[in-house]
Structure formats: structure tokens, C-alpha cells
Image (tube, rainbow, N blue to C red; front, top):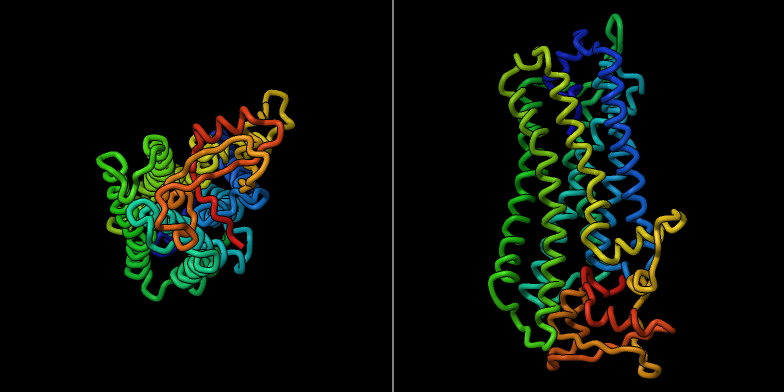
Length: 395
């Protein structure tokens, strides 16, 4: 995850090959600045949507919150700095930030991909084993803390060995491994396996099993009258998360290939166009931080309603009563019922309700949704509800 300043690649930082025409620098500046703006702004809105609306405070969404935080942080602290250093070849930011600059990307990417892995396992348990206990509020927080702890441990060598070196004409930031060539290459292999291949294999297996279940047969334990609607909703959940995972995998694949290839063939570091190749794969990797908010907005009704509320000041954005209803906490009220919808036992599990709190002996339960002066919207919600995420609220 570190830039070209790490490991064996530091040798090419001591050359003058970073000089490039102003027009090319301008193009790259626009490209990297766009990633920074969209990633930070979009992920901050995702964080606001989850924290500001009680209906969104769920187990799955808290993993998405962790994912948004890590993406926004990496975009804010590393994207622009990486670009400046890669284009100028000179480190302007001191030794302390040099250590942070090499340390934090691995930490953030680890947190991102293992948050996605936790969601995949959560979806697997909800759909394949709906009656088994789900993650509680406390367990979810513990998992998130463990993810960041392991991320810090994995990235610590980069922080420990990072340093700056003053050259005759400039200062460079790099990772001074004890054995530069061997240690740098081995570390990149370890990072590629632990922060890319392993979690993708786990997610591939879990989503394959879930996909076969959702698209190839009946869901275990389901006997509801609303089976078709529930199945469609569950498929939408899985589709969205698969899009998120595939996007991440495609964005980071060239980056990992770049470091493996240049590690095996050191002469490539002196190639005339290697800087442009690196800037390209780095931009693609950094751009992974900006796609998730767009995916959520396009594929999830509640996040789309949240984005509409965030941009309601725009003259061309209209927040309908249905959008307001999407983010309104569901209340059970025996009186003044505006609409009713029938949920099956499996439907509550996909929503994220704790099966321990569900009457396992009952196949169906009645859900009354209280709506004031919005009976049409409430009816629409019950008939076409999209249980994209859990409704179990975390304390």
C-alpha cells in the first residue's frame, strides 16, 4: 500500500525521472483531486446517514460505517500526498508524517476489506442459518476494534522502518528495510495475501453459497406468503455487496500486480514510463475509496433517500414522502393502524433482527407501521418494502 518510496523502489526515487511536462501534471492533479473530493464528501454523507437516522443503526450498516470511515480517512490523508510525492519525487512533509504516510494506507485498506468480509459472513449467517444467533451490538463493536487492531499490527513494520533521507537536491521518504530487496518484496507478498487474496476468497465462497441459495433454490426455513417479495429483497442486498466487493477487487488488482512484477524485475523501476504506470495504478487503487457511496445511492433505497435529504437544498432534488418514510424508525402501534404487512420468520432474519428475540414457533407475525397522513406511502412500503439492511438497532 505504500507508494514508490517504500522498499527496493527507493532507488528510483534518487533519480531525476520524476520531471514531467506541466500539462501532464495538470491532468493528474485533476484526476487525483476528483478522487479526494468525491471520496471524502461521499463517505462523510454515508456516515451521516447511518448515525443521524435510527433506522440505519444496524449491524450491517455499522460495518459499512467502518468501511466509509476508513475510505474517507485514506482519501483525506494519503491520496493527495501520494500524488505530490509521486510526481515531484521530493518529500516535503517531515519524518513523522513519512511514517504515518507509509503506515496508514495498509491499516485503512485492511479495515475496509475486512469490514466487507464481516458483512459477507453476516449475510451468509442471515440467509443460510437464519435461526442461529446473530451479532449483538457489543459483538459488532468488538469485531470492529479487532479489525483495526490487526490492521495496526500488520502495518507496524512500515511505521517502524520508515524514515527520510536528505539527498544533495531533495529529501526522500522511504522504508529502510534491514534487507531492502528481500524484505520489501516479502512484505508486499504478505500484504497481498492477507489484505487482498484471503478476504476475497472468503467473500467469494460465502457469496457463492448465498447466491446459489437465493437464485437456485428455496431459502431454508421459509414458508411465508410473501416469499417472492422477500426473495427479491434478499437478492438486492447480495447484488449490492457483490458490486462493492468486485469494484474493490478490480481497483486494487493492478496495484498488487505492479509491486509483484517490479519486485521480481528490478530493472522495470528504471523504465522510462514507469512513473506514468505507477500514477495510473495508484489512481485506480485510490479511486476505490469513492465508488461505494455511489453504489449505495444507486442500489439501496434507504441510502438513496438519505442522499436526497443531504442534497435537498438543490433545486432539482425532490424528497418525497416515501423517501421520508424509508428513514423513519418503524414503530409497532396497536392503534390507529394505517397499514399492515406480513413478515415471515426468515424475513426478520434478513432484516437483521436477533433470532433470539423472535418467536421461533411462529411462522408469521404482524407488523404494524404507524404513518401520519401518509397512508399511501405506507401501503407502498409494505407491499414493496426493500429490507436492504437490518432493522435491529444497536444500543
